[in-house]
Length: 614
Image 1 (tube, rainbow, N blue to C red):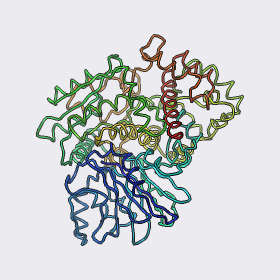
Image 2 (image 1 turned 90 degrees about the vertical axis):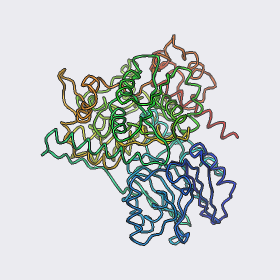
Image 3 (image 1 turned 30 degrees about the vertical axis):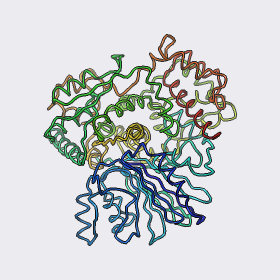
Image 4 (image 1 turned 30 degrees about the horizontal axis):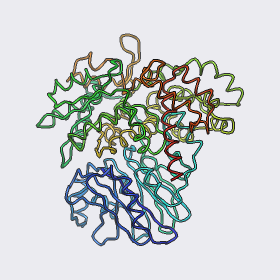
């Protein structure tokens, strides 16, 4: 796991070694085990390394036998040993034991199709001096990030936006539509970012750039397809699920360093710890975060799992002073990112890194096995609950701005289940000159929802989450929070084999009504877990990784004064875009998730302004 960067001067000017060093240094937190650069006249690569596999021989950038192909790479390929064996049989020679060198020879052998052979998480840039081009790619499900910039004189890429800001003449113009999408969803979906000039490569995409600057359109090389198989009994499905998930956990344990596991106490992380405990010959090191507010804390359930498997368990409690890390979070996310669970994720990563450089997590279980409450809401055909302010304004604002909604009624219903600040309320929040942006459609959602026409109700929204929420929120959150501490996080549920297996499960086995007449999700995984835990444990209501910001931001809350000082300050950067009276309305009604979105954005705008002025 690492930080990567590269720059190609398409005007043929020599690359500044100091520039590549600055870009790589900006990612040094991702690679505490050292960083390297490589310059070839008008091209430069940088690599900050977190050593997990082949600690001595895995330094990058690395090349093939005749130095015609070079790579800078972030991630892990879990089937690299099998691929290495195949490639040696085809005559390729290896000088290290690293998975990085396997990618180089796989590219030599299969060209752009090499990515279709990989099982793992990856983002990389390859310099091909025979074909005089760069080749870039990102993993199937979007675990590892890749940002890029193209200007009239250069093309550059990196694991984080802050490395790209080192480029001379970096254009920091804000993408207003991207900012509106942040308020809508709490993240900005690819290919947009907060900057007009910067793009995200979507998951399961590859593309190339010739040395003279001709860029191909990013090409999708893989997509999940839901094809339920209906001829198996439930018992057989449970056995197959166990086999698939256990094998994935085992594959994700390949490492030359010590490792542990995040343990929230939920079903997904408890499943990962169960399989790790059965595979390993020593106690699993487990890490949990809780809150003083019991309604948001699952530490008691994590403790049940830890005692059951006799893990080496570590717990920390997050308190309201956690907001002291907000400036650091904003710096590393590089753009507005509104998922408040980034706070506890930061702290659990910080704690785990004191003991191990790598952990497994339960992320992805809700998407693959239909566990989110939003699926229940969708299934019941209900709109997500919203506050009184939104309800009172919705009709009049919609009429005032001529908002017509989205072309697909089904997508409208889904967005009601998952959105944060709805379109009609964002229209009033924005200053008048920006207001029309709220009527613009979410292109990536439109495109992906169109592909779900033949899917069942639950498969359709699972697909949507796998293509949007999982890579752009959940995996982004974990990647940034973990790499801030030089910690590698592996996700056995976010695995191509697990995802493709899960796409064959009939919807009725994942979600159905329980004895109380309520829809319950993730049933097949829960039934598999009854082998290890009590039914009361696995079938309890889902909690998620929420943060008690409603209490912290309340009029008598511990952070009320701090947030008022930030959001009501007459010099607030927010007022460049938004109406102060609406922000005050959010405060008066303590609409906590709206306030968190604005608090993060205010800090980002402050930092962005300081960087521009520097």
